[in-house]
Image (cartoon, rainbow, N blue to C red; front, side, top):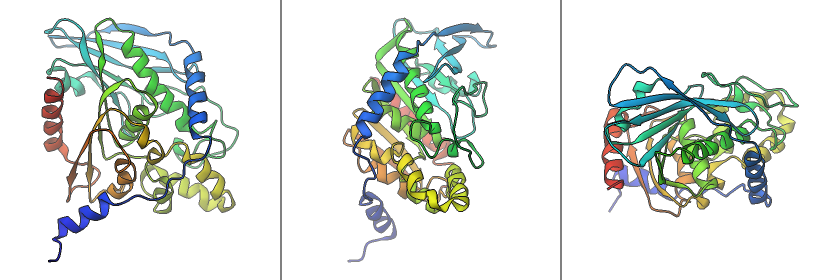
Length: 318
């Protein structure tokens, strides 16, 4: 009997396992990177913010990231529940920012505190102290492409990991219930953090980026089209660029993830194609679930999936 359309598509996705591009010193590189990040004092700062709503306390926060770049964000805490609370850490999409406190109230009404941070040198208040010895095409994704120690996402992955450090030093946070959340770039950051740190309890990632990067660049998809533009100019540097990016490709990290994962993709997504994320998802060994939206693009499951995540998280925290 012939397979129906959905069965054929899903079979291809769940069987997609392109060869890993992980280099022999992958673990050594990340162990050393984490040591450098931890050698920089966190120096956390928290300042009350006058939010025009009740039942919640809102604070502007900052801390030192991988280097001494001050990472800016929000800390939002419900006041209608007492004791140590689960904490959801949000990583935003490409060229976004920490946003506004009102965006996170759907989590707060579940009795969850929220930390939302900027990515350095994107559209928020956070700058970038890092230096790069080579030029770049448009966008931060192509900064430092010729040296894994300089590549842009090395610092960003560590900035995001140190958001967990910030959460864990807060007296009202239940450090056993750290939830990682992100969409697009934020989903990639969530995958990387959960691979590099054992503290997260749960990850929820939607239409994630940074997976199967060589294929993304070949197809000029999303933010990594800037790397495609770079290689149009310098085709002789392709092997070196791909070597650098192999350390940041989440498919090379996925088997390190230990926490529970809820993911989602849209099959019409040409920004972060679903098949490329499956190169990561299919290698996750921890408990996992993926919601597939066959006719949705990079918007993913939209409000339907937002409600699904709320129900999923509520049940996970029981």
